Every structure is written in C-alpha cells, then in structure tokens.
Image (tube, rainbow, N blue to C red):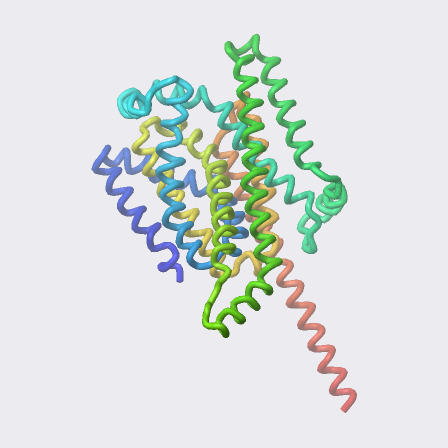
Length: 380
C-alpha cells in the first residue's frame, strides 16, 4: 500500500536528486534535499486538510489530483508562479522574466521579495477564511472544547467569519500604511496589500461557494438520481449522475488547487533563504509537493481521519497559525523553521489526543462488555 501510494514520490525524488547532482554537483544535491524537507514540514497540515476534501471524491478524481494536480502544484506554483510574479511586479515580458530568473538570480530574488506583501495578503486571507469557517461551525466532535464551544455559538451569526477577516485585513493594511515613513513605498504597497487580501477573500468565497453548492446538490439528489437510473435501465436507456458528480468533483478539485497554492506561498518565499536558483527551488519544492500529494491520498485510503478524529482540528489550527504568520510577514520577518514547527506541533498534539481518545473509548467498551457478561452470568 505504501509503495503503491508513494511510488511516484520515490521515483521523482530519485530523478530530482540525480538532476541536482548533474546540474550543480553535491552542493546542489544538499540544497534540493533541504528544500524538500522544508516543503514537507511546511505543508504537512495541507495534506491533512486536503484529505478531508479528497475523501469525498471518487478514485478517478483522486488520480486527477495526483496527476494533473501535481503538474499544477510543481510547475505552476513552484516554477511558473514566481516567474509570473516577477513579470507582473517588474512589468517584464515572460521571456525576460525567465531570463532574469536563470541569469540574474539576485535581482530575481529581490523582485519576488518585493512582491511578498501582496502574495502574503492573498494567501493569508484565503487561509484565514478556511480557519474561521472551521472554528465557527458547530461540530459533534470537539478537540479543544473550551475554545470551540463558545466559538460555535458565535458562529451562528451570519457572515461573522467574513467580517472578522475583513477587520484583520483592514488592520494589517492600516498598520502597514502607518510605517510608510520607515519603508519607502509602503504607502503604495498598503493599497496593494488591501486589494490582494480582498482578492484572496473573494477567491475563497467563489471557489468554496461553488464547491459547496454542487456538493450539496449532489447529496440532496443522490437518491432521486439513483431512482431515475433504475427506471431508465428498465426502459433500456441508462442514465447516470456523472454530469452532476463531475461538476461537484471539478469545483472541489479547483478548491484543492487554490488551497494548495495558498499553502505554497510560504514555501516559495522561504526557499529564498536557502537558494535563489530557480532550478534548484523547483526541484526541491517539487519533490516536497509530491510527498504532500501522496500523503493526502494515503490518509484518504487508510481512513486515518476517521480513526484519528482530532487530526483535522489540528490541521485547521495550523492553518490559522499559518494565516497569521503570512499576514505578520507582510511587515516582519519570521524564520521558516518556526512556521514549520508550529504546524508539526499542532498536528502531533492532535494526533496524540486522538490516540488517547481511542484508548479511552476502547477501555470504556471493554468495561461495558465485562459488565454485560457479569450480568448474564448472574442471571443464569
């Protein structure tokens, strides 16, 4: 099962490391390896959240997620996206931007870093909305009940998460604008931060809304469509619900890709702390992205989220932490190690809490069985 799920990841790792050695020797090998580990550590929570969405999709769309999706993740976000950012921010053509990335890595890094406030605002707002919608929803299973119970009550207020997200964005942009006298051009960038944050919020609402709409329609009409299929088969004209399922799955897939893009922002920016060579960045981050994708499918197929019920909670808290970090890094630098450790600690904590819960339930069931057997024996 492990080899089947992670086989492509192992193969891409081997090819990527060989390519690194051929491209830049053993130094490049070490850099690519470090970047791979960085990407996995920063995106582990991404895999858990993705798994919660992917388990609603059939095997076909899971394969699309691992094939077409990984092409988008590796080449789109880890290679093409930084070049596009440079092209837009520096008003360059795509060929000029690629030439700059390959032949003037220092200038390329400078331009990407200069565009960081807009990137962080977009990604931070998208992830913040995911976190807020999660903690404001009333769930049967609660991990940190003393936090989640009162927040679930507040969540009954319509559009509360949107209001809070906009307040956070406005505060971030105003704070950034107030520092204009310390940083040249900050006043103009404050406007960019505000617009980028609104764009991230709109993207979440549109993509998430469409995904939820088609998912709800699919659930509501599942029984009716099954009856129609049976009736059509009896008449010799089979009809399936593939069209509706396809729409629901497509928008969930689109939601996953935007989610992955938001998660990848910190990895792409953080990679510049290790190297400004776009080829090595693409190799290292691409290898890491492959493992995150494979881990997502593994969690789905093994039913890990059903067995360890607090994992999804831990991942969403990690998302909230990452959203806050992205918004903070608009003005202040935060070490990537801290970013990665926060996510790992929260997920590890939620995993251990799930293990303890399972043990307590098993012990309670054992006591109940023993009690039942004793009652039967006394009755006899």
